[in-house]
Image 1: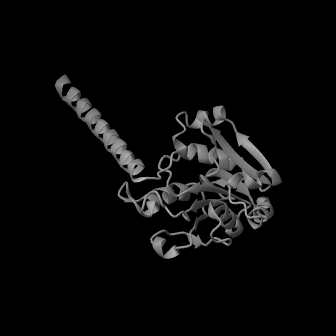
Image 2: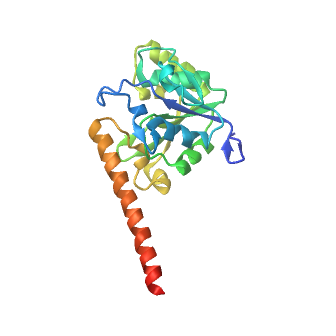
Image 3: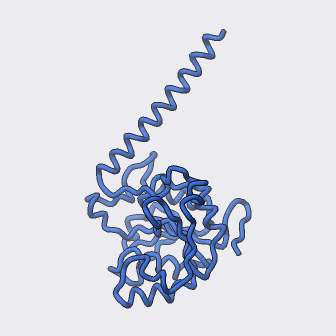
Length: 224
């Protein structure tokens, strides 16, 4: 059973997966400038507000010395994201982890908290979306370790490859939409175009907010 106190969830570890090669971005997307810092800092900040323990899975820890959390490597190097989930589970001091990619700018705290509150050690809790299952925004229990190891040893690398070896619970589309009607939580940044579009959207949003503040201020003064 998940323990929540002081607004922190103590029986689940937040895990950030930063093992990708960013081949389509042509640079490390986790380190791209974002909101006055680096992309991965915003994700770490959010997870740290939810989970006392946050782990970064990376085979290049020297690139992330600025992050105040434990860095751990893949135990099955070269086996992709599934190996990252395995490492996060293996090194976690808790019975379950919430695993997320390092390039998801619109993570929603309420959805993460809801999923973490349903965490258990015996399987997977995964959200569904209009694009299908979202394994990089999911909860994994420690009892999945043997199933993941067997899958990796068989040469399979897809995250869903081990699902038939464990218990899988799904949050259906309607349940997810209650917290995130636009399903923005699952958007990730893969290419330079994705990144530039993200920056443009955020600049537009900031401009819109500034204009609203100005308009309200003008209305207030004109009332006098």
